[in-house]
Image 1 (tube, rainbow, N blue to C red):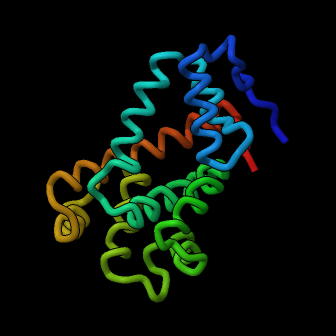
Image 2: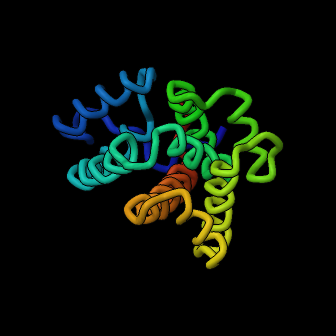
Length: 177
């Protein structure tokens, strides 16, 4: 196991507001210490701003929770981010992401049995991660599934979880489970 570059924060490091948020978020995650939050909480107000932004994407976004979890799990798988995979495979189950569907998500957009809609969403996720852009063909396919607001949200969702995977990996944040 790799040592975290920045240790999880204590009450003193987090401050009273972030400490309370960390406790609530840890309980919601089913973890005694949700390491992501007790590490990022050290940034004080930035942490709260990030939580607000993240919450607007998930759970507060316009893309369905099931599809949001498909995207997050695909990003986590491609970025080899065990921390994200641990949490979002669990969250996804609450919204209908079965073990079988999760295996298809890991296999990718060519997985047998995926609906055309899921194939489009996963293909766009892969392309965006790989090229940092979407071809006109991929954009048109995604635009056939999402309205304009959801298209923007999709881009922000993929980039948010890609950036989060980078942060988790670089800081070497320990997995909770």
